[in-house]
Length: 261
Picture (cartoon, helix red, strand yellow):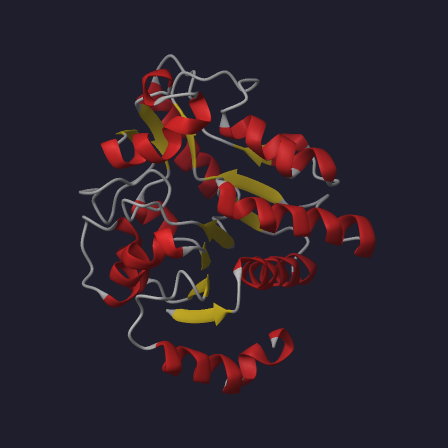
């Protein structure tokens, strides 16, 4: 796991964007795993800018989103399909037939989850998986006690997640209590993981995920097992990390990061 600390949220998002753009330019057929949430909006704005100003090409890439709420129509303003369309897909030259999210309206949710796993494998697996971290320490909707080898499945949302996401729906009582999510094992099979976290509210749980023990109570801690995981944070989110000076030294001195400094 590599941890990179940037001065502020915009700078952290900029680095994450440059990593994605680099991999997409190197492999136009990139299979890209995507995440949602306020943290990701900066990344998507910057990717759109790169597309419009520098011709970053999305025409041949394929995307798989981490999760989707159960019971929401794609047109619902709070569905993740709607989020992705608004923040990225409608503004770049991606083929919408190559953008995939779980179907939260499926009659047979178990079959839908199995189909999603099969679809990922059909495209050769995910090359780069973008991730955020929730206040419950989750990646995707892998809430506490998610098995570290779990696959795509339906998960009930915790009170912490309901409180975090409830305001988007106008109250917790108006939001779905379940979501389809890639499993922790599914995420860890991506060839590269890129986790972006910003803000003081993420500092404690980020430190537990990065420097604490690997535990199903903090599903993001499973990323410690990944052979190529990059964690990009701003100073606020890095506040709880004990080895900040070491992480800064690596970024400033390792040749692999020469083009990103």
